[in-house]
Image (cartoon, rainbow, N blue to C red):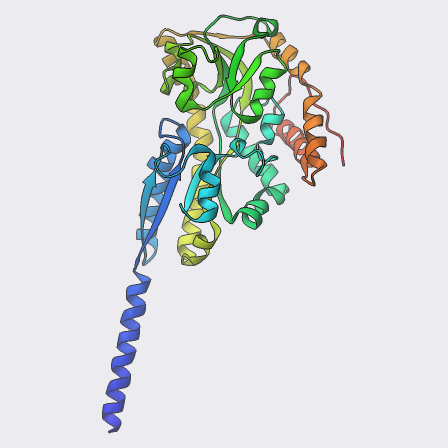
Length: 358
């Protein structure tokens, strides 16, 4: 009788061990998406670096296996719906532009509020990481209000202005319909242009049909979407390389992952973050050359024109800070910190914006 009882106990224990072992080795499936296509550098790096690196490291360093289900170019979530997609769990990981969330994340595109900043994507992403680390609100609000964890910040290349017409001074832009996205429409407004909200997937047709005559755009976008075919003038205005995208993961899904898988996702996320700056920096001169080779007229405006444009906007950063401070956001702190930390990294502003301490 005792032997039978012991045998039963051993059998149950074996089943439990086998079950837990099977569970431990169960494949973890994660849905990763962006509304933008892989023609955007950050999405290409999600596809070519983040996904394979996490997959490889989890297989090599843990008993688990990760399989990604990928959906880019709006196949799972649209550009302006990615935050909500991650928040609700429709997707597990999403890459998106904070600038398309003006009501949810009005402070997060703070570099846009300080135009004519560094044109170095590597400096830009380093700068924004410093600010995020020194102002916990920026990451915490994503977790507390939107149920997602920030995995990586994402740098864009330096922003310039592509147009269907030649121009040499800020006055030449007055009354012209020009496109932008979110807050950078203000840059156009202060130049006297007529700002038009748009997105890259519709840019070619909109410029072709005369909806607008130009775009605030980094060179990779201008090359990859062949906008030079419609607007052959690409002018280096040096608005700045803006880090205003993020890669985030649904917080509840992240919490359910084994600790070692969590650590790998965060580790690869930080490497991906750095890579967005490095790759954009390396690609910038190649893309400028590609524009020239494609027949675009590429030129650089004199520093005096940048100073004129920056002077036209010199009061706007404080106005934005006041507006966001009033609704309880640490805007003055963030903008002041960004200006000062950029200088510590060696950047000299063409016009030094003044932000009052609060």
